[in-house]
Image (cartoon, rainbow, N blue to C red):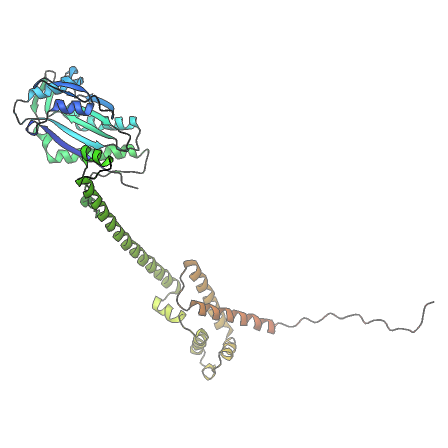
Length: 381
């Protein structure tokens, strides 16, 4: 399962920063709206990336709030202080694997569960420049609302725990939609919380993105490039370590299988199979099991092999063990040092055994040939 890009940021629209919710609403919706409080008209009708916009209201809200200019001018008028917070703005990346209808349904469900059900009015707009970065802007009111309009502010909406709940809910809804169309998933947690050794990149923002698309570099773009290089280096280091761990694991598994098969430790197995003179080893084993033989006095390997073959039961057992070991080694691709010498000796033993069998078998008698008839010396005329 791969991890898709997660982006979900929340900001406050505040007069102290020179912002107004009317201007923000006009910008994200690509509309022309006049701010009745300061008589300033905000015209963003030249924005072409707007592909869907919609206002969702809580139960009991005035129906006229479905008109964008009415809703946000009412929110602006309700605030009287010069540093008032007039709205809350959310920007979130939409999964590009989803169709447009699925993206819209995703936003509707998320807004209904987290905002309108709690008493907020929500104005959302989907932007898509066909550059692989579809996203949604959600503008939320900061006051509760009834049939007469806005009432008191709900300070619980500012809690840090509420923000974390929104972030988690967005990930859940995205993954719910992705489940039916893709293996991609998103995770709202930071890399540190996920246990991922990776440095997060910084969000470029609309201004920096526009500059980068023109082929120019920005400080944020260069910083992200540096972060990507460092993350790639760290990923390669982790990959090399993982490969080494896998190699050790495979080696340990081979050792375990080998020990289970032969019934002794790997050191004992290697002590046996790495002997250069395997015939001498076989003779020594036979000497241990049959002290009456005189193998100790014999130096010639071929003679030693011939005498060893007299112990038929012992040799058959050794040959069987060698055959089983050969099959196991080839199946598990476990080739210890000296294996070629061992197999050469094994093949020589088999060849000698075949020769001995042929010698011991009786030679078939040749078929009798009919003797030619004796000539009588008579001629036929």
